Image (cartoon, rainbow, N blue to C red; front, side, top):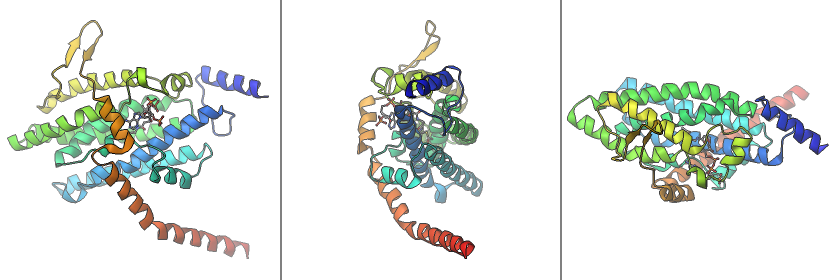
Length: 311
Ligand code: ACO
């Protein structure tokens, strides 16, 4: 009966074991996972756009090959994550439809424009850096397929983070114009990267329940703080400055104090009013529509194969 199933589920969570697709789970747990994994998958797919913008203009063949590989990795992450979401009983078609019709979200960060080559460096260093801080704990998430997908995703994100940091390092230690371009990119991406971790704990609707279910292992503010502390060390080798006058070490807390991002701006971007929301969605929808013939051809081919086997 339901009470026994719930007790078994609770015991698996308490013992830090994994819930697997065929296990019983509370409906709200299933819904929360579909929401989070789908948002995560959509973010990977939409996230290809800002960087894809620089593939044709990368400053060398080597840089172009690296960026191309990185953007392809993001597509791969999207696919593992859609597959993980599908184990919860929703189809890929439904998920794509939820994104395109605007009923599911994707990360706020991908609604900002990439204005210069240095933005590719800043995204790799900061955005992928923030993604790693957020996703390493998800490798221990209580839902097996999501946790396992995160292991590979995090390894690839580490490569992405290093390539971005290396771009910033070359520019930050380059000519005055290159250094100014890198500083400008850092100034524009810093606060949106801090906002990626979500609203402050007091305003985070899902955190308490998601932490009790061990989907989330740390709160939004804990991870944001960890990211700030990390960047303060990393920026030292870049010959650049984090754009926050309020940054200072707090001996008592054992962390850096810092200025919070503008959370009203975060919520406004999430509601669809960021600088690039409309462009991102229009582009995704056009790509989906333009791919209709490929899906139709693949389905026709699969049907032909099946009927050939039957006769
Ligand atoms: N962008 C868009 N929406 C956000 C963001 C953000 N940066 N942060 C929070 N939200 C939304 C939440 O989705 C939620 O809305 P919903 O109820 O409609 O789903 C609402 O704001 C309240 O936030 P929380 O209660 O804190 O939501 P949650 O517990 O899901 O925490 C978080 C948000 C930390 C982003 C979590 O979902 C998560 O860890 N997701 C997996 C990682 C991920 O999606 N990364 C994407 C970018 S990384 C990359 O692709 C490179």
